[in-house]
View 1 (cartoon, rainbow, N blue to C red):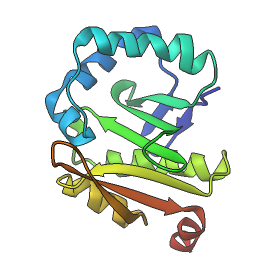
View 2 (cartoon, rainbow, N blue to C red):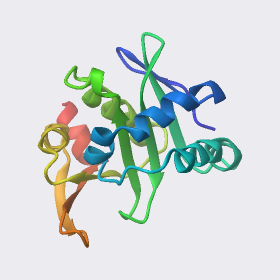
View 3 (spheres, rainbow, N blue to C red):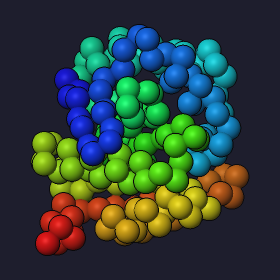
Length: 174
């Protein structure tokens, strides 16, 4: 069961049905989708995905996914799950645009990474970042991630696969 997590300013909690409009708005935002490296999906598709959080993801304890709140206000989304993109668990985060550049992405990522290492006992956490997303790449490198490979899409766009190993995280904390 996805636990509630707290950081200095954020509360990460399982989604509730009341979060649907916020979830849809986040994933319908073209800028958010651009930096997440995905195509903007039709509203019906996103609503269907939201429904699957309850009927599949949470019901079957498939992986951890959180609504992210700042002072009680929905400001984003986070996941930590096994994907076909990497050999292990991938960190996925997205924030609404009006909280960009406040350091919340770093805070959010660090909290989820800590959960993965400390609570789940993961050996590594991976991420997939669009090569042109220089801010997210800089944040990942500052957190100790290393670029392990580039993947070119059919459209020619490059995604950088980054990895942070638990042992390296411990060294960074000392």
